[in-house]
Image (cartoon, rainbow, N blue to C red):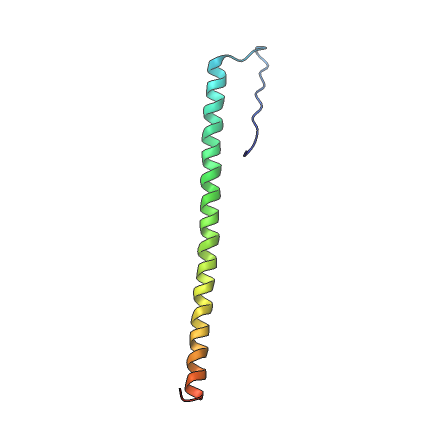
Length: 73
């Protein structure tokens, strides 16, 4: 569950089926937007983690090369 919806109306005591349908459509659109935003943020986080792993791999390979050269492998 992502959240909750509360409908309040001052003008009339009961909401019509159309009122409820519009509210549900707005709720659904907001939910889709929030889920898409969450997916983008997760993708950005993973991309950053992968970039860090690649960057550290370059340093490791350079160190291996230095060690190999120093022991004449």
